[in-house]
Image (cartoon, one colour):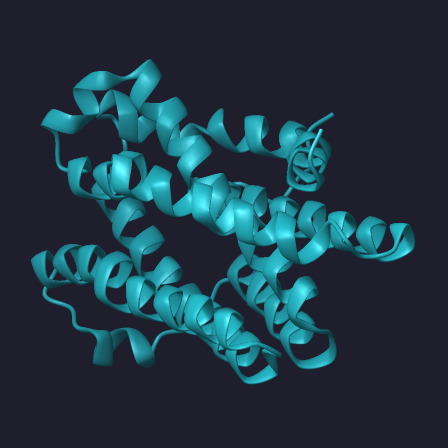
Length: 223
C-alpha cells in the first residue's frame, strides 16, 4: 500500500458518507431544489478563493522548481477550469464574482477555509498538500459515484459540474497529483507521515460537513 493509498483508506468512511449525502442524491435524481444548488455554488466559490490561497502559500514555500511548477499549474486550473463552471451557474442566476465577494461564508465553509489557511500559514509544503488533496481527489470520488448511480445526470442542468470531475482529463490530473504526493511524503519519517494522514482525514471530514451544509444539515460524522 502506498502512502497515499493509506491516507485514502483512513478517510474512506468520510468519503463514502459524503457520496451518500442527500444533496448529491438530489443532483443525480433531478430532485434538488435549484436555490439549494445556487447556495452551494456561492459557498463553493467562496471556498475556492481560500483554496487558491493555500496553493499560493505552497508555491511560496516551495523548495524546488518542480514544486513551484506543480502548484502554479493547479492555480491556473482552479481559476480557469473549476471557477469557469461556477461562473456559468452564477451568471444564470444573475450573479457575478463581484457579487460573491460581498457574501458571507456559512459556518461549515468558514470552518473548512480556516483549517486550510491555518495549515498553509503554520505548516510546510507536505502538510499543505495533504490538506488540499481531499478536495481534489475526494471530489472525483463522489462525482464518479454520483455518475455511476445516476448516469442520466449528464442530461440535466448539473451536467457541466459532473463532467468537470468525471472527465478523463481530471482523472489524469488526480493521478499526477497522487504520484507527486507519494514522492513528496513517502520518504518522510513515520511520525510526520502519521500527522500528514491525520490532516488528510481532517480535511475529508470538512468535505463531508460541506456537503451536509449544502443539504441543509448540521455537521455530523458518520457512525
